[in-house]
Length: 478
Image (tube, rainbow, N blue to C red; front, side, top):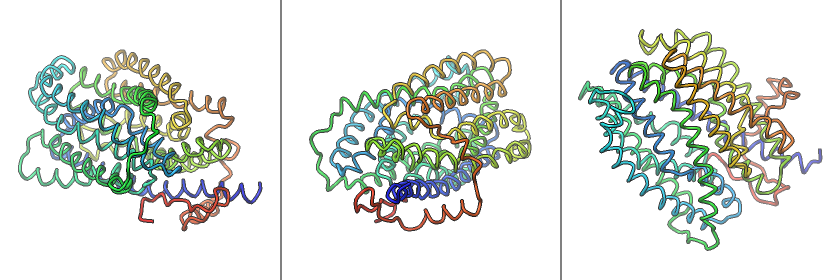
């Protein structure tokens, strides 16, 4: 390998490591607040209060996936490309037009669900308790802020403001949530307090994400540039939206179907088990933050070999960070679920099953993101839709019979299917596996730590890309 190629590879690896470590740290802190929030809700308001919160939040996340229409991923993908090309006017134009489509849609859905909440509670979830309808009506207030939050934060990710993105995505919600929940607990013991808290912290995060995007994109001092074909971008975004919607439907179908055929308490137990299981993919979600825009950038420059090397490098780190976490969760599953309360022990088996699925999700690496960032969004969309349909059918068969365990089993099956198929397709299209088995066990802990420390140092100039200094993905001030 020539010195120039080696330096270029190091630049890409270092950028992924710096951004990934930053995102990992904030993700870890965020998960701590997330688990603290779940613990506080469970202890203060019981499984029923936890169920109302989780069902309402799941419904809002599902609707937000519709209202954003794939604009968050569009802002990440094209924001990264336009940022590298210094076309900041196009970034502003893309952001403006994304909001022009999504904001009115969010407002329409907000009013529709507010008036239809009793019908949704009664007919969709078979819950005659008026508190369920009240919870849905309160939660609708969060739909517009969460839509703006998703689009703005996608833009921050495309601008490589990784630290700000990670703080908003992982930390701010539940940090503010814990504070608000404790304050409200001394005011009321109503089971709807967690839902009110959700609306409050989403509004705060939505305002913050919009502010930071406007700041770091130099929105006020940038003029919109002509030349952006928004119609083309909209239909690309629509494909991304369908894939994202299918993924979200698959992810929440078990919760919704469980909400229909089981008790509200079962929903709370299952969602807490799922929340804990996601810790096994913490490295994946962290390293995807800098990796996704890097993949889009390398693909736009035609550097497929470097894209493959970057994907394998990121996946290797993700695998070895995830494996010990999986072992710990499986061994401590009864203890972990017992922390939430005795009634949550019912979710122990579900936690183990879900954790295995999330580990496989992590171990195969950023397969879906590679397809989306390299122009294969339609293929990724079709895979998502097919897997989602199959998962819903299995949910309808297994959840009424096996409850929480049935929901966990179908979720894990869907995760495995949705990761293994792209894993082999990437090899077919681009000639590499995201997980390089020949290199996986060539890990010297001392050398590994040394490489990470070296990557975290101040970025150097890349000869392969002229004299431009690689942007610090931490999101700090240059």
